[in-house]
Amino acid sequence: MPDSIPELQADHDLGHANTLALPSRAERFWLARRECDVVRGVELANRHDWDLTVLGGGSNVLLPPVVGGLTLRAELDDVSFMAGEGGAVHVEVGAGVNWHALVQRCVARELWGIENLALIPGLAGAAPIQNIGAYGVEIGDVLDWVELVDRRDGQRRQLRREACELGYRDSVFKRELANQVVITRLGLTLSTRPSPKLGYGALGDRVADPSSAQAIFEAICAIRREKLPDPLVTPNAGSFFKNPLVSRSLADRLLSAAPSMPHYPQPDGRVKLAAGWLIDQCGLRGFREGAFGIHDRQALVLVHFGGGSLEELLSFSERIVGAVRAAFGVVLEREPRGIQTAAL
Ligand code: FAD
Ligand code: EPU
Image (cartoon, rainbow, N blue to C red; front, side):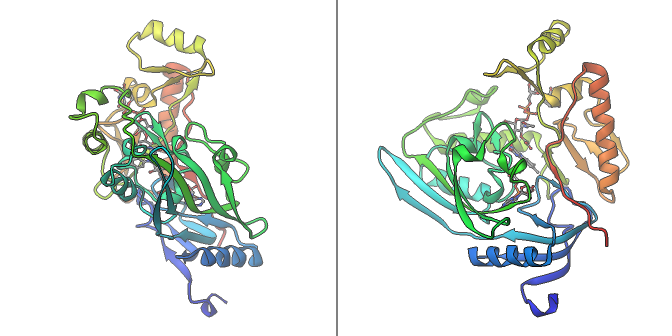
């Protein structure tokens, strides 16, 4: 059956399609360059009752040795700009556009809004899934709508930002709509009017000219290169855990023992802690066991030295969760998403 459909590849290697470089193969793989190809891929999965896994750049997933069903990548690569009112510029972006290349392109046109999101790996289509964020900005700040193909009825539809239920590393796509939709296009509103956001940490000290989006972009790239490992050199998935949200009373107890602990009070009364700091305080930064380790410049990033498996990675990460729980009474939640394993 797969032989009769040219786009459908059987037993496709995903080892280079995930930034953790975990060994993995897709039972079936479908590359969709146009929206109609996405629709056909979804119809095919529905007709055969296959699991459907959508893969972008693979920078936030934990792939099992075999991904069952159909793995689909939406590679729509169009970008268009339309001037709106009051300096607004509406940008429509295909899901397959490289996120960092988009940021670069917008900054080069002197558009403001996503310069703080420079150097985040992956494709634009994945950006709303965990509401990507860095240095005080989230995609939710500029997102207007998401276009998608819904596998439940095969229909294309548009979701407004409010319906995406964006939160910290969270959205409806990780909950009710998990594994149900393929995002094909995003609508963003950027601005020609300067709006520098320099409040995160010491970012302001690193920016040569705060009135230039290009200068902010360059400072962010420099900071990120100093502490985050390049996945092409040292495989990793960025932050392996989310920063935990804890009660005010727990935060106060921890702060009385360690007044310099980084903490970020939230509008709902809870307090966000820095998981990297907690892991670091356990003395684990730079710790290595077998094929996996904790990055020596950022304890929130787990790195793969090669030859390791998903099972080993999960057991390594559980040791970290255990150490942080024992030291601080805080339970860390994983950030990268798991994918179902095929029973071949
Ligand atoms: P993938 O890893 O391929 O997929 C992630 C999830 O999205 C999966 O569940 C997948 O099924 C789903 N998905 C992907 N595409 C689609 C689609 N078109 N339709 C429906 N579902 C889809 N993240 C941040 O938020 N901030 C950071 O600062 C940051 N820094 C990072 C630094 C490094 C070095 C690395 C390796 C990762 C970092 N990340 C960061 C995480 C990651 O880059 C983002 O989550 C990114 O959006 C993932 O994009 P991707 O295309 O690689 O998605
Ligand atoms: N810290 C330590 N030791 C460490 C790591 C961090 O003490 O080993 C301290 C830092 O000194 C700082 C605080 O913890 O006081 C926060 O560190 P950092 O600014 O590096 O940010 P983070 O909280 O570790 C988050 C995101 C990153 C994002 C940065 C910048 C999460 C899970 N991670 O990291 O996102 O780039 O902020 O905004 O929210 C990702 O999601 O993959 C990711 C890289």
